[in-house]
Image 1: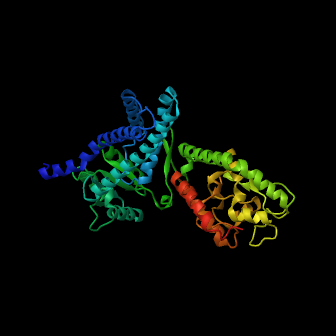
Image 2 (image 1 turned 180 degrees about the vertical axis):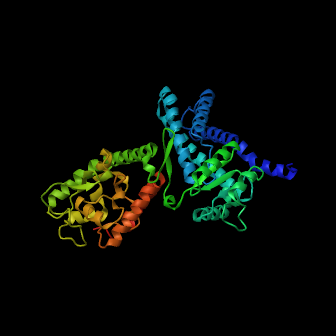
Length: 467
């Protein structure tokens, strides 16, 4: 018979998961309503327009609830990171704003309404982000105090099992209470007995999570999963050493058959590609219209006055999937036959006076915004190398070709970390490749924005390797 104290403990453990979706929805609705009123308050002196009517506001709230419920924004894994919460929120916000624009903006499109839309978007992004990340931090603190926990056991002892145990014990904010191992051979203070005993004690011990070492017998694994389904227990498989890689794993489903994707990257997902391409188009279009429109004629005239030859230096470089494209630069050297195979070095005699200035200020790279506009390049990504250099590095560096999974960039993580300009030794190119690989695996729009900010800082204060 279950004691009163045990009933209270179970209630404390379960109650938050029962109420959290409702608390989440109430908080979202409050933030949404507050954002609409704040946007109206900020713009109240600009005109007689004070935002949407009450009936329209109610429709928008319903739209938001439908989007977030369909996208399951309220489902947060215990190990989720704040950046993933923001990423999920951003996806829902894009859908919401698109629907608001379609429903509401065409009714009476004017400057004030457009301004209101952008002010509202800003409030929603920052307030929702602050609210959701704050809730996440509070939840972590709450769980670290011993509340909202899950009882967990591991079936099968091994190296990976021990690593998982260590992480669970270390990260109390996950809210996972490790109960011990069930294994047919292992003994010790954490050994709860053989695996057969697990089936006898799991319900009585109120197990919520089962971690199975993948090396267990296949029939036994199926038996455990069937048992867990019957008793509403979550099951997770601990991958073996071959899959314990420093990358994210995801799954693809072929009918009823699942496979593990071991080398999937963030930009394999359509939404991420859409966000990155949108940023590229907006940024490059702005630069083309407001800067290149007058910079190209001006720099072109200066180049022509100093030396004969074309304004642009057009060079074949390797892009995404090793596709060769024509990379644009302002010509900074006198025409020569060694531009593809000989890097520019300090005090290079081929560099013209105007070319030295262009290189020192990185203005020679500005035409590459046209490459971004037509889709050959991105604002941020691995810097493209010449075709001969690419062929050479492929023979010298492992995983070199992995940097061509995405479009090359005008700037990149390697460049803002100091690896730009002439490659004098193998350490420099290996470091570039390592940082490019990291960027590809960890891409986010926030990483791109951070690299852009850092690039401006480097252009202003660090010109050591620009020649």
